[in-house]
Amino acid sequence: MSTVKEQDETASENVARAASPQSVTRVVRLLEALCTSSDPVSLADLSRRLATPKSSLAALLRGLAEEDFVIGADGLWRLGPGAFGLGSALAEARRRLQSSDLIRDGMRRLCAATGETVLFAVGDAEGDRLTYVDMIESRNVVRYSVSVGDRRPLYATAGGRALLATCSVEALESYLARLDAEAFTPATLVDSRSLAAAVAIAREQGVAQTVDQAAEGVTGTAAVIRDAAGVVLGALVVAAPTPRAQDRLAELAERVRTEAADISRSLGFR
Image 1 (spheres, rainbow, N blue to C red):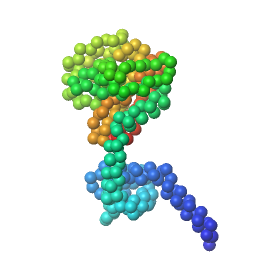
Image 2: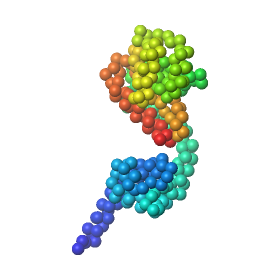
Image 3: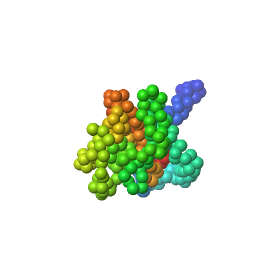
């Protein structure tokens, strides 16, 4: 027979397991799965979607049901009033914390992680150019720098190509048809077919990268940021001297793609 001390230790271990980071992550993923489903979902379906044992999910669902975050009936689960109340509170909190603050926080993280200048660019109404509206400058002695408010053509910049990659086929074809491309460097792509191929790669990879396109000696890496409705807010860009960037192109691409996704997620995009 177990002692009182042993029972207390077992209870403490159970509490620790229930409060583990993995359990917290599973709760979040579980609620997200129910959010994206228009119909109630079975335990088996949730298990498949989340690649998590049914026994683990069942315990989490019971705990969430006690707080009215989920409701179970006939073996199916859906969100409960507690979840909608939390969602309303979170939406209000997000309104108080401006999107620009969340984007700038991400820019600071990216600058610290890469050691390079980080920019945020938005496309113009005509769909031909972008404008840099914010910047976190690298602390390196040799660094890339622009002035906030500077405008650049879409075709020759990483941010521009990232924005073009979100356009419809028809919109991209219209852009390329009216484009009178200027070669800013010997490496600048000005041929419509080559530009279409570069945009297609950016669309496939979720990140655009340019080397010596808008200016010699500058490498750009960019990915778009979206809001809760999926609307593209702009492009997150890392700009680095090409000699320092040439051996870390894959690293820069992954860091920019990940940070843009994290910022978008903080803005409610799923």
